[in-house]
Each structure stands twice: as C-alpha cells, then as structure tokens.
Length: 328
Image 1 (cartoon, rainbow, N blue to C red):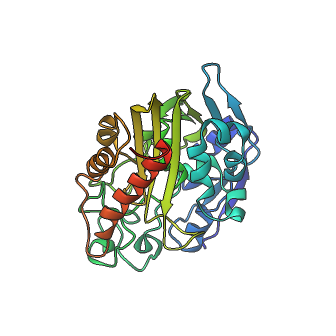
Image 2: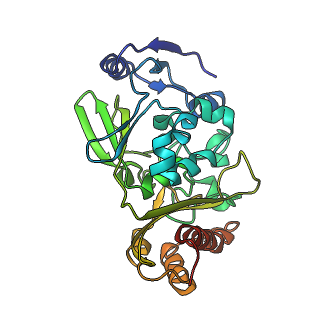
C-alpha cells in the first residue's frame, strides 16, 4: 500500500472542493472495496476524502410514492429497512445475498454502485489488464475466464460487474443523484455504468470530483411482484455466476408488463430490455423460455464460461416462476 493522507469532509460542498483540488484523490466511506484495491496496488490514491460525516444516511419516502436512499446508507440498514422490505423486496433480497454480514454493515449504497470488478487479472498487477493499464491487453480473454462476462464484453475487456445490489437497482429503474464542481445532475441507473468498448478504464459517467449523493427508486404498480435469484459456487460470501432480478405487474393472472436484469454475466448490471418487452401474457413455461432466450441473445462465451449462458437462462426462468407464483 502506497502512502496517502486522509481529509475529513464536514459537508458535501467541502468534500467536493477537496476532491477537486487534490490530484489522485478518492472518496472513502465503508472502504470495503477501495481498501482491498489499495492493498493490491490496483488503486494508489494520494488523498482519501472521508465522507462518513456527511448527511447522506437517510431513507425517505418521496412525494410521488417512491423512495430516496442516501449514498451513505449501509447495505445492512437498507436491506432491513421497513420501506425497502415492503415496497422493494427484490432490492432487499439482492443486498442480503451479497458479501457477508460484517461487510454489509460497512458497505454503503454509493460505494456498492462504484464497486469494481473482481476479475482476477484486474486484481493482480503482474498481469496485463486494459481496465487497470489502458493498452496493455486483456489477460482474461486468453486466460482462465470462468467467472468473466458473456454479455457486453469487447476485444479489450470481459470483466464482470460484481454487484448484486446494482442488478436490483437496474431492474427498478432507479436514478442516481450526483453533485460535483459543475453542479448537480440526475442519471438513469442503466446509463451510469459504461460498456468497456475500446476504453474499459472508463467504467462510469462520473466526472472528476463528482460524488454520488442519493439514489431514487420509483413507485411500483400495486400489483407488482418481484424476486432476486443468485446462483454461485457456495451458499454465502461468493460472487454470482449468474443472477436474475425480475419485476412482474400481474392482473387477473396475466402479466401486463415485466422488467428483467441479470448479474454475474455482464460487464455492467445487465438490463434485458428486449426480454422485458415480450414478457406479457399468462405465466407459462413456453413464455418464460422465450423470454430467457431473448435475455441471453448475443451472449458470447469464452473458453471456460460457456456454461453461463444456460445457467443464466435457468436462473431467470426460476426467478420469473417464483415472482409469478407458479406457471400454468
């Protein structure tokens, strides 16, 4: 770990000012991802701006019926919050499937959104990695890539986005509030993370000095049902091989509309828009098989992860079946 200094932020404006004028600075709250990266010399910030003292720890109901989540709300607090458990169970389920209780007690909403890939070649600085060092190459493409992405990859990067929470946020059509040197802006969750393309080092639309301040969840239809299903190598403290977050609006036994997002298979939290658009009609094996095929359309397997295509389909079908309360 390289030497660094810590600056305590007293308010949001002061935090942004400090980060903007300090070259090589990073915001830190729970530190559950950043500290790991610093230990491995993947991240070497000269200045850490401690934002734990900021007033960003509330979960509030919005006038239109949605919910606003402060960026510093801890994952455990969010998962067990009565509003989230009642109105957005898919988010609570996703949070509780991630990490361990100890990590969830520290990890924050904003930090989870900014969580970086767990690709082993990204974490090991002895291997070339375009995400870590642009232009150096992608070791995973020709290496051991069992855990890597099958959706959204490029010739420059196939690193999987690791977050469970972000998959639920994507299916919920959340929006992210940002504040930076140029003011405030609101970004749709599905637009926040970037595909690797030719620039895998650019992971989000964040500008220098910008800070995530809150996440808004829209109100759901009163008939909505949801579920988060995660498939992994072991039952706890493990990243997804494939996961599915689904929301169904059901009326008189018919699916009026649906939303689907996948995790463990994409280079970003993967919102399957096309699959969601055809998710209408009576819940059935035929419908769900068709939807699963659409959700994995365009998947590109590597040497060791072809199994993820079928695994993701089955996970999605199972999640849809649970959310629908069974099939005809």
